[in-house]
Image (cartoon, rainbow, N blue to C red; front, top):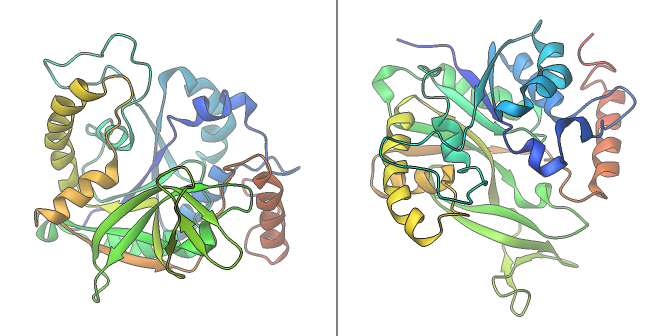
Length: 307
């Protein structure tokens, strides 16, 4: 039996990164935010419901700035990512204020998801073709193929900024297009004629092959991932609360990598040729604004997304 896929947007970090939703600067005179384009493209691809994972204290601002203007186009649901949402027997360490990471964000949706779902970041531009591909894949999911997931991968050079370093998950993919592993590189920079990463603050640089595929946190899962996230979170807490109680994070890609390694899941990589956009540095905003304007003038988007 097939179920209609939903879109999950991880937005609980937006307030902390930007200093509150009211401080998010629109990209243009139309008042567009990057998240508007993700939802607009998702609707065009076929998604009929979006679940926003947010902090409880940001709901009023979030509804005003984002949710209320899209609710006529797509069903909207809100889920809180709460720091005290922990398994029985576990408590928040004294002094902990940091959220528990992307894996925990999806766990927060446990009571509202019983179908295949896509996952994206709130502040990344992914492109219409990526949403179409992931929606089509998820629409084919059924209870007979549990444990078969998908990731949209991007060409590394299409995800870089001219204004500093970035963190990317560099993917290892087999000849059949299946994900083997993701290597998290936290300091990647464009050089004159190549791209490289460093793990020792710039003393040594390692070249990344041109055209490498990277993860931008655009995933598609069947609901079996939820039970795996629950089990994995327990193991994570038992180790992380001892070693790094205030800063540890439960990352979604790490669990996926473990499941692949244990033979419990496989992940098809859908390679996107879309250009990724995001505001990693303040100088990036002008680049994103110009790109959005060019796409509107080319007819990829209407002048006003939500009329």
